Image 1 (cartoon, rainbow, N blue to C red):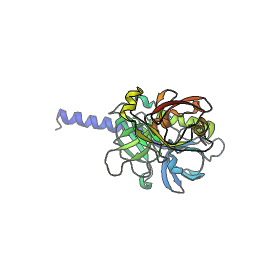
Image 2: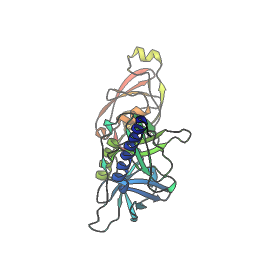
Image 3: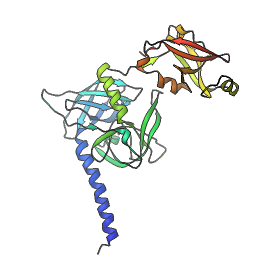
Image 4: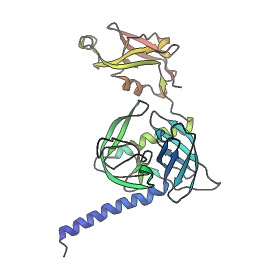
Length: 313
């Protein structure tokens, strides 16, 4: 005879299982297996007319890939937009006129809280449509993309991911996509990461509109260094680090503005620049062609230059 405690545990487990099954039933039909030139990965349809989102590194150097759905339908897909800086890409599946595909809905990743149940669906090691579950471990993490750029607003989970899961959806129990699975730490257990759905939607909009994400560019190579304490105090700087310019691209915005090697960038548009990642973060599309104040320390003396960022090619 089962005790009341055992019955409660069983009901709880049944509820947990039902939540996962519901998420899978809603989402799995829209998850695809992707076979490209450099291996396989995952993705998912987000429109009924065949648009697929995946990781940029899954389709690296490919213009067309093979795509397979849960129901067995398979075909080719074209890469219509790719952004290595955010590790996201958009594909369009070939389809006969009038064909409709199963598709997913995005949820609001800003509403995620640690402890929320999440489910990952993908194709680890080619095992098609594998399901793992876990919880949101943390939100607002940062992760380095393969391009070297810092990815922000990353969701950390303990849902198991393996090679081949990249590009697949991270979903809630009601089947809403809250992230695109992108990485795991091989030497650790229970550390997996997904690009937050709000970031994904922003990037997808840009890729579909322009084929790329527009970002501004000033044409310097630099490294994050500490600013001497006497200079921080003497010039009342708001940060104790900045970007030391190690090279200036000829003909670039920085070159035209008079930036020199060994200048120390401490602010752009009066926003403190604490390092290379800060500089990347503020060089957004709205700064393209806009005259902007750039504050540098040159031989320890503050100097404000006028710079007009260009569009990154």
